Length: 408
Ligand code: HEM
Image 1 (cartoon, helix red, strand yellow):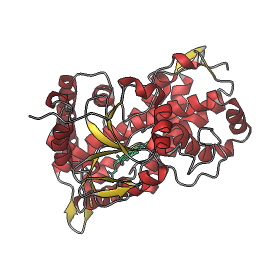
Image 2 (cartoon, protein in one colour):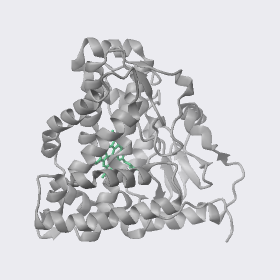
Image 3 (cartoon, rainbow, N blue to C red):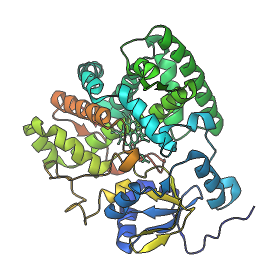
Image 4 (cartoon, helix red, strand yellow):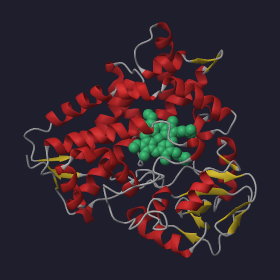
């Protein structure tokens, strides 16, 4: 197979994630969307400016058809063996990999079960889980916040949403960590995917036989004028919720706390007036959002954008983390300002694939950060911020660890 011609295309080093905002600022200033070679050797068009990003995410000439994306990966790989491993077709057949009309159908059915009302009802339970985790910290001078708060909170909420029985939570958490973690082999991921698929099939049978109050029981039963989700679609849906709903939220709790600790004036304002919290969460999402790059899309037609034409059949990557720091849209975008009149940031994406779990994500971040600060207002970083590492994923933006001193 022919490898792609990659001269004059900037190659991104694997380490760019350690300082992504510097790269994004340079690409934004340099101008329109441009071709770059991702660290894993795939050539893509990267979109870094806010207005281009929003326009592209809302453009119906952009597709997310999972099978085609895999095909294009091979065609756009620097060398054929560098194309990323394909996810099992059945598991990948979820709404984030579909186009209308199937996307509309999946999203409508899910929307019927995953309602704002159901999410609101989760508030007391999320508060309770958070408080239990905070109780477990009592007496410790220092904790690693990702491990002791963000990860167990978000995985417990996900497990309860799916109605995973308590005795299965531990193994479910282990599979989930493998699926979303950066440092696992393709074989480990394949084993965990198969285990989640088998487990979900059994769970579907159990929910049919004996439905609970959880969102998944509603999802199993939901119908729309006689239409319902098939078993395969339900399995793919669980797989999507695991990969889209867990690491995003846990990383956002870590990023939010980190941003506040590095901006003591903003932290002080929030501590003085906790009513600012919901607005602060949105500003934290803009300033240090946990999804740096939107998932891969491709052009189905030539698309003129920001003064260039992206030809049909090209992979495009929208840098959400860059768009949210674009000074053309947000004044002094590199500064955290929790009382900023925000307008719409892109931390949850935009267009038809706008995050289906945004209200739940927001709620967990709000409760996690709010209750932590209420209990430990003198919280401080326990290490020099320069020593902290961002996860090696190009899509996700989250800290590997966040050691803090509680200073009760
Ligand atoms: C703060 C936490 C979260 C952030 C920052 C976030 C961010 C995002 C983003 C940026 C997208 C769009 C990706 C793209 O267009 O390529 C997305 C989609 C999605 N998210 Fe979230 N998310 C969060 C929490 C959640 C939660 C808690 C759930 C569910 C449990 C969830 C479920 C989904 C689903 C199902 C999609 C696909 C929607 C579609 O294809 O129509 N997310 N999320």
